[in-house]
Length: 288
Image (cartoon, rainbow, N blue to C red; front, top):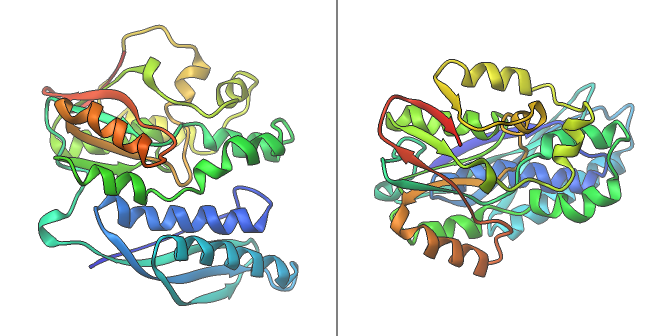
């Protein structure tokens, strides 16, 4: 059994999108371990005296639709009164004991593949600040963020997958560092290969940021980080950008990477970017 719980504050004002994104974010923890979600419970914090219950109904509808899409059953949940809306799921899944995937098995010679773009954190903040178009966010960003990671993991499990993590609040470098620590290996990132959401770099260039970038930078700084190419401050910030319902970071033998990329794209996964590799050496990260 896999048991996990996660909830978030609204990244967008639309309650249905909020429900979908939060549910996909919660379910992703089961997928990232190679599991299949079976049941889910709603976790709700809501200011019922300040906000209309019709908004909550839409949040729950979005969450339920995503649970059904995942092939799981929403079995109930619990709610409390709170000053700010928060929503998520407690998800129960199953996985064969011999097929559990963790973030601790990456090996030297592995390729790294990422299945969603980066930069959602700054785009959410910029949209709230009126600096980024909500229409563009809904068209180019939210459908990918709300997409389940199930299809990507189903294809990845057909290969010799050594490690996996979903890229969420710690940003790309934070989660890659966890993978490096778990395997006692070194992560190498090819910056030119990284996929970014349209507008993310521009928002950092214009001074937008998130409340997590500074902490994510401090987290990564505990281990050696070598940046071997010239990057602007805005380009660097994208490496620490916190993701909500981010993609999977997959480590598998480099000989299998190209085939997996083709399978992911054929399955409708939005991105299948080979962003780097795992090497031997001291735990840490190199950006090239």
